[in-house]
Image 1 (cartoon, rainbow, N blue to C red):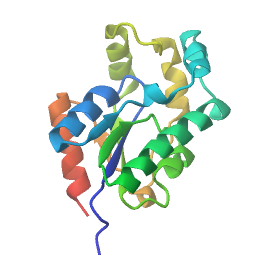
Image 2 (image 1 turned 45 degrees about the horizontal axis):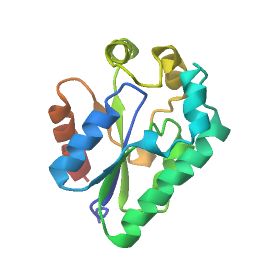
Image 3 (image 1 turned 45 degrees about the vertical axis):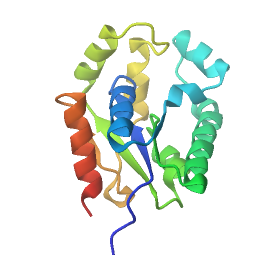
Image 4 (image 1 turned 90 degrees about the vertical axis):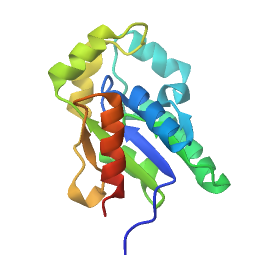
Length: 171
C-alpha cells in the first residue's frame, strides 16, 4: 500500500540551493500555504549568522520546533502547506516529519561550486557564503529508509518543481 499523498512538503537543502524560490513556486502551483523557514528563526540565530558564525544544534532546536508547530497546525486544520527548512541532518528531518505520514521532505541537491555561485549573486541575505562549508559539513544525505527524494537543482526553478512533483508521485 502506498503512503497517503502529502499535505505538507518540506523543501530542504543547504543555503543557496533555491529552497525559497522553489518552495514558493511549488506552493503556488499546488495552491497551498507557504512558509519560509527564515521567518521562524529567533533574532539571536540571525544575529549569529550575520556575524559569520554557523548555528549549532542547540541554536537550531527552537527553530526546528517552531517549524514543526507550523506543520502540526497545517495537519490539524487540514490546510496543506509547503515550508522550507535546511533540515540538513537526519534528526532534523525526523523532528519535522517523523510520525507524520502526511509530511514529506524533499532535499534539493547541488554541488558546492554551483551553490556558492548562487550565493555570491544574491543580495541582502543574512547568511553569507562564508558559512556554506559548514552547511555541507553538516549535510547528511538521506538514506533509502528515509523516503526523502533528492532532487537536483540543475535547470530552472519550474523544472525543479516538476521534478519534485514527479518524485512525490512515485511510490
